[in-house]
Length: 181
Image (cartoon, helix red, strand yellow):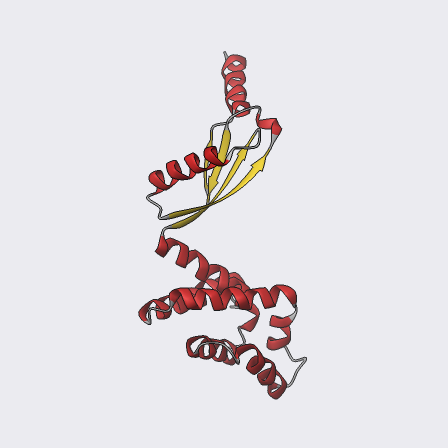
Protein backbone atom coordinates (compact mmCIF):
# COMPACT_ATOMS: atom_id res chain seq x y z
CA UNK A 1 0.00 0.00 0.00
CA UNK A 2 1.42 3.33 -1.08
CA UNK A 3 1.30 6.14 1.48
CA UNK A 4 0.19 9.61 0.49
CA UNK A 5 2.64 12.49 0.77
CA UNK A 6 0.55 13.86 3.63
CA UNK A 7 0.95 10.65 5.62
CA UNK A 8 4.66 10.43 4.79
CA UNK A 9 5.04 14.08 5.78
CA UNK A 10 3.32 13.50 9.14
CA UNK A 11 5.51 10.50 9.90
CA UNK A 12 8.77 12.07 8.80
CA UNK A 13 7.86 15.38 10.42
CA UNK A 14 7.17 13.69 13.75
CA UNK A 15 10.36 11.63 13.62
CA UNK A 16 12.47 14.65 12.71
CA UNK A 17 10.82 16.79 15.39
CA UNK A 18 11.37 14.18 18.09
CA UNK A 19 15.03 13.81 17.10
CA UNK A 20 15.54 17.60 16.91
CA UNK A 21 13.92 17.92 20.35
CA UNK A 22 16.35 15.36 21.79
CA UNK A 23 19.23 17.32 20.26
CA UNK A 24 17.74 20.65 21.42
CA UNK A 25 17.78 21.85 17.81
CA UNK A 26 14.04 22.11 17.18
CA UNK A 27 14.06 25.81 16.26
CA UNK A 28 17.13 25.56 14.00
CA UNK A 29 15.66 22.58 12.15
CA UNK A 30 12.35 24.43 11.76
CA UNK A 31 14.18 27.31 10.09
CA UNK A 32 16.03 24.94 7.75
CA UNK A 33 12.82 23.11 6.84
CA UNK A 34 11.04 26.39 6.12
CA UNK A 35 13.90 27.47 3.83
CA UNK A 36 13.79 24.11 2.06
CA UNK A 37 10.00 24.31 1.69
CA UNK A 38 10.49 27.73 0.10
CA UNK A 39 12.86 26.18 -2.47
CA UNK A 40 10.18 23.57 -3.21
CA UNK A 41 7.65 26.39 -3.63
CA UNK A 42 9.90 28.14 -6.14
CA UNK A 43 10.63 24.88 -8.02
CA UNK A 44 7.41 22.83 -7.61
CA UNK A 45 8.68 19.84 -9.61
CA UNK A 46 11.87 19.47 -7.53
CA UNK A 47 10.51 16.68 -5.33
CA UNK A 48 9.36 14.68 -8.32
CA UNK A 49 12.67 15.23 -10.13
CA UNK A 50 14.56 13.90 -7.10
CA UNK A 51 12.21 10.92 -6.78
CA UNK A 52 11.36 9.73 -10.28
CA UNK A 53 13.55 8.41 -13.11
CA UNK A 54 14.25 11.68 -14.97
CA UNK A 55 17.75 11.93 -13.55
CA UNK A 56 20.34 9.30 -12.79
CA UNK A 57 21.16 8.54 -9.17
CA UNK A 58 24.47 10.41 -9.54
CA UNK A 59 22.72 13.51 -10.93
CA UNK A 60 20.18 13.40 -8.11
CA UNK A 61 22.97 13.13 -5.54
CA UNK A 62 24.60 16.25 -7.04
CA UNK A 63 21.33 18.19 -6.76
CA UNK A 64 20.89 16.93 -3.19
CA UNK A 65 24.47 17.95 -2.34
CA UNK A 66 23.73 21.46 -3.62
CA UNK A 67 20.59 21.61 -1.47
CA UNK A 68 22.40 20.43 1.67
CA UNK A 69 25.81 22.11 1.39
CA UNK A 70 24.97 24.71 4.05
CA UNK A 71 22.56 22.56 6.06
CA UNK A 72 23.17 21.26 9.56
CA UNK A 73 24.36 17.70 10.07
CA UNK A 74 20.89 16.72 11.30
CA UNK A 75 19.26 18.10 8.16
CA UNK A 76 21.88 16.56 5.87
CA UNK A 77 21.33 13.14 7.42
CA UNK A 78 17.56 13.54 7.28
CA UNK A 79 17.63 14.47 3.59
CA UNK A 80 19.97 11.57 2.81
CA UNK A 81 17.49 9.26 4.52
CA UNK A 82 14.55 10.76 2.64
CA UNK A 83 16.55 10.39 -0.59
CA UNK A 84 17.38 6.75 0.14
CA UNK A 85 13.68 5.97 0.69
CA UNK A 86 12.61 8.10 -2.30
CA UNK A 87 10.59 10.48 -0.13
CA UNK A 88 12.06 13.84 -1.17
CA UNK A 89 8.75 14.65 -2.88
CA UNK A 90 7.12 14.83 0.58
CA UNK A 91 9.39 17.58 1.97
CA UNK A 92 6.69 20.33 1.87
CA UNK A 93 4.30 18.07 3.81
CA UNK A 94 7.11 17.13 6.21
CA UNK A 95 7.84 20.82 6.82
CA UNK A 96 4.14 21.55 7.47
CA UNK A 97 3.83 18.63 9.91
CA UNK A 98 7.02 19.64 11.70
CA UNK A 99 5.81 23.24 11.99
CA UNK A 100 2.51 22.10 13.53
CA UNK A 101 4.37 20.02 16.11
CA UNK A 102 6.73 22.91 16.83
CA UNK A 103 3.82 25.33 17.29
CA UNK A 104 2.07 22.91 19.65
CA UNK A 105 5.30 22.42 21.60
CA UNK A 106 5.88 26.17 21.94
CA UNK A 107 2.22 27.01 22.59
CA UNK A 108 1.88 29.02 19.38
CA UNK A 109 -1.45 29.22 17.58
CA UNK A 110 -2.55 30.78 14.30
CA UNK A 111 -5.87 32.58 14.40
CA UNK A 112 -7.97 34.08 11.62
CA UNK A 113 -10.24 36.88 12.77
CA UNK A 114 -12.97 37.94 10.37
CA UNK A 115 -14.94 41.07 11.22
CA UNK A 116 -17.55 43.25 9.54
CA UNK A 117 -15.27 46.29 9.69
CA UNK A 118 -11.53 46.83 9.97
CA UNK A 119 -10.38 46.26 13.57
CA UNK A 120 -8.09 48.70 15.33
CA UNK A 121 -4.72 47.46 16.56
CA UNK A 122 -6.03 47.73 20.14
CA UNK A 123 -9.05 45.55 19.33
CA UNK A 124 -6.79 42.95 17.71
CA UNK A 125 -4.50 42.98 20.76
CA UNK A 126 -7.48 42.56 23.10
CA UNK A 127 -8.70 39.57 21.07
CA UNK A 128 -5.18 38.07 21.04
CA UNK A 129 -4.94 38.42 24.83
CA UNK A 130 -8.36 36.82 25.34
CA UNK A 131 -7.50 33.97 22.95
CA UNK A 132 -4.13 33.37 24.59
CA UNK A 133 -5.84 33.12 27.96
CA UNK A 134 -8.60 30.83 26.66
CA UNK A 135 -6.13 28.51 24.86
CA UNK A 136 -3.34 28.75 27.45
CA UNK A 137 -1.12 29.84 24.56
CA UNK A 138 2.30 31.41 24.71
CA UNK A 139 1.83 33.20 21.40
CA UNK A 140 -0.99 33.89 18.95
CA UNK A 141 -0.34 34.80 15.31
CA UNK A 142 -3.33 36.71 13.95
CA UNK A 143 -4.54 37.24 10.40
CA UNK A 144 -7.45 39.63 10.01
CA UNK A 145 -10.09 39.69 7.29
CA UNK A 146 -13.03 42.00 6.64
CA UNK A 147 -16.41 40.62 5.54
CA UNK A 148 -19.21 43.23 5.59
CA UNK A 149 -21.81 40.43 5.29
CA UNK A 150 -21.23 39.68 8.99
CA UNK A 151 -23.05 42.96 9.79
CA UNK A 152 -21.20 43.16 13.12
CA UNK A 153 -19.19 41.08 15.57
CA UNK A 154 -16.35 38.70 14.72
CA UNK A 155 -15.66 35.11 13.70
CA UNK A 156 -12.46 33.66 15.11
CA UNK A 157 -10.94 30.48 13.71
CA UNK A 158 -8.07 28.70 15.49
CA UNK A 159 -7.23 25.42 13.80
CA UNK A 160 -10.54 23.56 13.44
CA UNK A 161 -12.20 25.49 16.26
CA UNK A 162 -14.54 28.34 15.26
CA UNK A 163 -15.98 30.98 17.58
CA UNK A 164 -18.81 32.72 15.75
CA UNK A 165 -19.89 35.96 17.39
CA UNK A 166 -21.25 37.61 14.26
CA UNK A 167 -24.54 39.47 14.11
CA UNK A 168 -25.41 37.69 10.83
CA UNK A 169 -25.28 34.29 12.55
CA UNK A 170 -27.40 35.56 15.44
CA UNK A 171 -30.01 36.87 13.01
CA UNK A 172 -30.09 33.51 11.21
CA UNK A 173 -30.61 31.71 14.53
CA UNK A 174 -33.45 34.05 15.48
CA UNK A 175 -35.06 33.53 12.05
CA UNK A 176 -34.87 29.76 12.44
CA UNK A 177 -36.49 29.94 15.90
CA UNK A 178 -39.25 32.28 14.70
CA UNK A 179 -39.97 30.29 11.51
CA UNK A 180 -40.07 26.95 13.34
CA UNK A 181 -42.71 28.11 15.83
